[in-house]
Image (tube, rainbow, N blue to C red; front, side, top):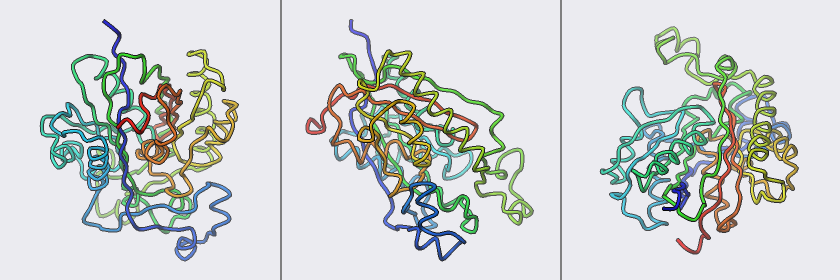
Length: 334
């Protein structure tokens, strides 16, 4: 019997309608389009303006987009993994709610959180379930409503983040396609450099934490940038070395969209030409768990069956890593 590998067989995506441009941000904080673009590569980001809707709204729409495009029955989904840093609420699983709302009532579901590495780690988790042989269809969604935890008076963070969602379907493959290898790492010493201080068990919500603005994301930008540049590039180098891949073998780099300079540094370490590096950061900013699947959604039409794709991410925690995957289909086939 051929070895089971876990392949991506469908992609879906969703972003809100409202576009927050750099020009609009100039009216909110002391910044300008040239400064933002030169340092991050971001021109605009999408924002879910309706306060009555949370991350689940984004995730549901991305999942429904996938279901429609792939023409699958939601009842066939065995498991739904919800990668997010901005769950609708504590305790109650956002993934469970999303599964019910999309009609995947035969699936069990749960949330997975590792900041901007959530989707990458979710790919590893989804693949393990498929490779076990016990599950046939695993839906992995990456979604975040980052605007819900961003302070729009803080120019160091409000220029970076946006809202969005993407979804991929993992299924068994017997042709050797799908996930081939992974290099995933964490370092808890980094948690003070990128975090939201209050709202957890260490600093429960209180009148004081709200007054002190501790429910918004904060970061030490220089430290995070330094580690992200080093660790994302190292992870890609590790995965290529272990798998005996050269820059010629790699068809595409699908990196987490945090900062164009970080992506450029990673591509340079891999010695990849610009045409192989996929970016949409200029239109969406950093959507945290949603960046990688949004890239897949935007560039799915370019992928050919058998293409070697390297995924990379870096997030709070710290968490980072790289995944080597062989693409399993030409878009016209679904």
